[in-house]
Length: 240
Image 1: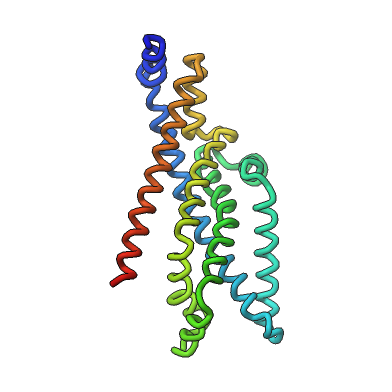
Image 2 (image 1 turned 180 degrees about the vertical axis):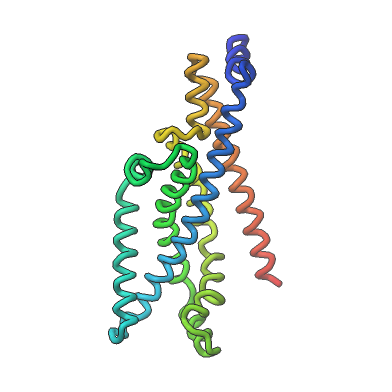
């Protein structure tokens, strides 16, 4: 017991090493939130393009169909490349090759960009499945009201799809949060990197690594609790 208390003191109190964990949590959450925003934008756009292309398969005339076909091909290429390569490799390529000229002050933004592009590929398929789950009659009703395809998707289809795919989107958020633990590979001091720095000072991995495991677990449980609260509110609004 004395040994464990001594390790706690060395890990968190001595030389104010708790700051490594605090700054690491901040960096982890910043990367996750920025990547989530970017990934959601990319995912929705890709899902809409692919859904629009699928809905126009019977109509093979006009410049619009050609443009849509090219966009759909680009989206498929994006999905294949991103989902077929590890996120860690993508992060290394993004920092050491694509943005090798960028100052280290922008490391967090580059990490968020890399994870956002990666997350967008998975969000795209989640959103696309949600769009496909909405009854076709909803789209036809929108058209009968005079809405074009974009307006029908924006006001009728996508809002219903979001409700259907909310649990899957939250699971993607949790996965994204945990995937950011590899940010230390490019030198970003996230939560995992902070624990590694503390471990290098105390020469003991037990408390630092157990601590970040607990911290990640707490963050995941917090996200899951927020999802449960949101789902209850959505169910309540459906009953009104």
